[in-house]
Image (cartoon, rainbow, N blue to C red; front, side, top):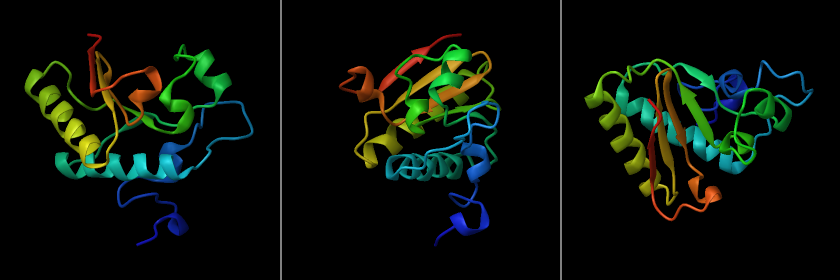
Length: 142
């Protein structure tokens, strides 16, 4: 089923959620096959959770990424990282579930992905090999 015609990239995520709305750049989103696959993976994560996931950041332009303090080679630049801010990271069991789900999803898709846990929520990427990782990456920044 194709959702792009009605503004959705997957069943529960819209192109607007992927878009870099706060950036001053004219380009708000570069939609590549890899970014679409990442969106499908995020949909699988959402399906595991069975509740909405609030996207705080997805695709970023280089300029906006620099302004918000992102890594110069961030997976957000490729649309292959998503920050979710409605996961209670004070709940260690919830964090473990999300990390487990994301690791399994990455494995099924043949991706070396990663999770970062922060006070504000969680970061999920499907391109940790970009940073030289050879296996699933987990980082707790709390």
